[in-house]
Length: 371
Length: 269
Image 1: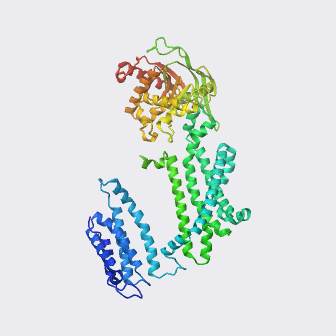
Image 2: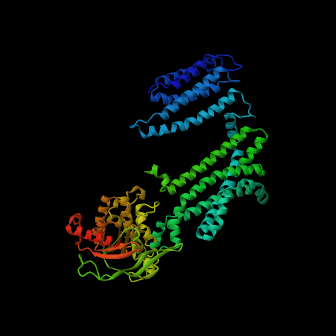
Image 3: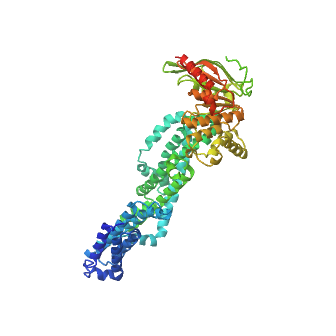
């Protein structure tokens, strides 16, 4: 490979950062603040970028990230030209290398490990770069915690107040989301089966259920709070409603939209309705059901957080934690709560996708990878 | 009505009538307009016979097959399958049906697809497995038990569906253009294979096709049908001896019979 010009330019930026004043108050040169490790790292990045060979480019990614981290860790007070040059220079070098690695066509006789690594590199380095940019800006501009917290503030909250946050997560995800989701799924499925069995219900109920999909259910939250009390029950009720309608609609579709020939086949065997349900309609409905569940999980988490905003009850739950903390300017807690709820909801979604692949791996949407 | 043949080519046909069609008609009416899909059809199919129904689209050949299978009910006329009403024959699983498409369940492996009719019948698990495996061997798919339908070629899928139709060992095999979607080369190979299975199992086969060579190659008798209204035009006796092989297709008699069928088809226009 040729040297990567963009990485080389970025590394030169970092090198330039060593010979200009580092901070706003601290006027000493970058080389004095960055010290031996910073200088060596800059030299290394410059060297790696200049060679342009594949292993060197790969090594450029962690070196660039480490350099940017070092630059912001060494800063006291606001950032001067030296800080910004070093910081952006390292980050750019790392990004350029990432881009190069992921864009270059894979060697045909490359091993499977190397290929997997190639796929993982952008996915792994881009979030790190984003976190570093966040932290670098907050530190460089000395943004106060009350306006926008740094990554380290959020991490601090996560490590020090985790008993409170864990209890919040338990209330929000186990008591409210999981319970509501379970009830909504079971109820929706049973109603879906009933609707699929009856033409009358299909004509009468289905348009209604479809229309309900457009209703902003969280708007009902205050009403539900009055009906079920301000504790977790009313929020679970929101989740039940949010889950119920997509499950009904998709169950009905999955049970009814059966290929006519597949149905005739079973009729030719003299199969009874129960046999047709078990051998044909139910497996046919599974992919539809999983689509509904994945949609419902995302909707549930959003709705439950908003419902907690709208129905203030005992100070528990991630949504209430967010609104209470925001009111008193504790944005580090807000971010920690958002981080936790995203992490948990992504995990649930991932688990569902895994289960879907397990149970409906035969479905055409998975075939490309299976073959 | 067609008389039983005086000389059976292999002697495997009995005199027991498996399908008795007597003045059968099927009329579809839609928005006042009536379509006569089948008019006054008469036919007897004997035990162990291989009978083809041939004709252009709209001649009622598939309608006749679906009537026999009790997938639709006739407007008028009498129909008996295995000496019973078509409905009773269906519930007693007297026939296996092979559709135009393989109609395999994509969530089931090949083996489990063949086991499906046996599950409906309530055959014990071990026996299901054993019988399905034997049938897959018969259609030459022994190594494919755990594959899914979409992993097989069109010809292989149709062979799975034939194995499935044979699963509960029915007397009668009803086949609706089973090889219509296959290419010529695969189709001829499947024809040979079907004849082999027929000779081994001695089933009665009613085979719908629109290919003249296919009908002549396979059948003992060919029922020629014509459209508007759909009716039986003629029945052609095929006196080519069984077992037949690829050379049968090149014999002079083969061409004479093909010409006879072609002329009968033209007669309806």
